[in-house]
Length: 358
Image 1: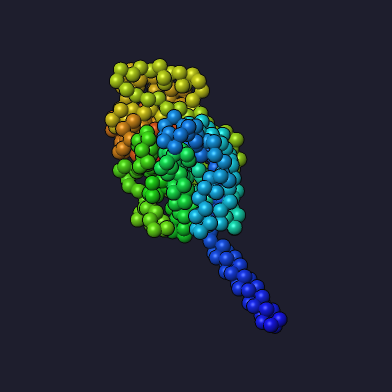
Image 2: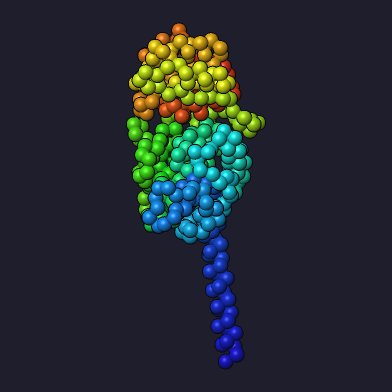
């Protein structure tokens, strides 16, 4: 009887050890993904379970975000860091530089396979594009957010976070540039924009199209951006403590030169002119932009339309004015590229090359 008990005990111990070994092997095969939390709606809370507007952003910490999605353990070995805790309308150049440097430091580690950044949706497209230009790794970087706070009945944050981690750990996401994942869709940082104030399907690359979907616990890619990004860019923020001041002047019917003059007086090194149509220059604004260029301010003609190419020498003689055109970048993304361009050069020819490259 004693021998039988010993054998049974030994068998149970062996089974426990084998199970632990199997779990360890499974964990070792999973990708290592770091979640960098910055706040936003995905970390927001509302007064009631039906509060989907008028909530408070950036209340839930990264540890609680991870705990809320226990399924993450099935697709990655996840760790988290709270980098910031802000609503994304308060995102600044300084925040971007801090975030980019942390991302590059983590991606340089051999035991980090990908990064997920939780972020407010208001400026998610801007942060994503900035990182797309300055991250120095082919490893996946996925920016994710939510349109409904964590306390809402139909909160989209948990599934978005799960899909983002799944994508960040996918070998198919390597070399695709910085990605934005929400609503089961994968978009390129350069092309995607927020298109609706409140709905969960707000993020779209309306003309150029999404890159793929997250379906059936897998990231499916169908296209890739042809524009250079990440390791193939010429931008390096490792030694930067600030970015040049670049502002946006918005155009509308009966617009005058007040905004342009004020921004130049405030120290702008570059101006994005968010023009009507194909970046048209109203008669009241053109002299102010020309005067700003004569003072050394770089002028980029963009469009408020949100789609299409701003044609060089189309609605203005850009060669004569010594202006740059934004190509297909919207004004807010054109601002990001111009800031980084100004860390390299003041040549409008070189800057125009960059707008056609990135």
